[in-house]
View 1 (tube, rainbow, N blue to C red):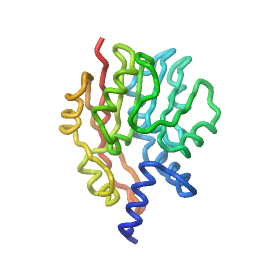
View 2 (cartoon, rainbow, N blue to C red):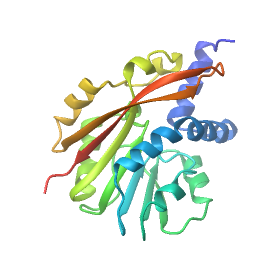
View 3 (cartoon, rainbow, N blue to C red):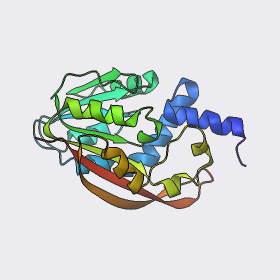
View 4 (cartoon, rainbow, N blue to C red):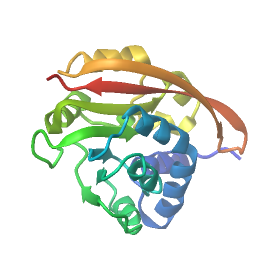
Length: 216
């Protein structure tokens, strides 16, 4: 059964900022459908011992333990616009983790704080993408790495809810965005994975993991 326009708008809103009773289910669904993208993005960081890691939009945080286990003495800092997701992630009571709410625009940390940063499937909702990239650039240490996972525009266009508040990217548009910032684009790695559609069919999702670096 296809969703009505109002239902599609509500789903798009929940995917952007899960809340209420439905938000828990949406958070679990996002974790399950995005875990491949999330771990590809985390692996691209090449996390080392004693790294301080920042993640924007961590959702329910069920992947965080896997990030912490990639090296020794890793510290994880999560930023969320959704209070429900912040609470869900913090409830795991993992060591060396801290969680914060933010407005999706201003990064609430001082300059040169983090070795690495990552985000997955949040770029579609950035209100001022150049400004946000500059914010992330500032809080990274020199030579710090920022990895971004995003599904390709051609795939996302097939999902009806993306008509409501999603800004879609392909690699060309993404490069144009990065060129407006001080970041150096290190690599764009293409991936394809099988994911379950809303109709419970297995479909191919094409996505990119972008690696950016702060200048020395």
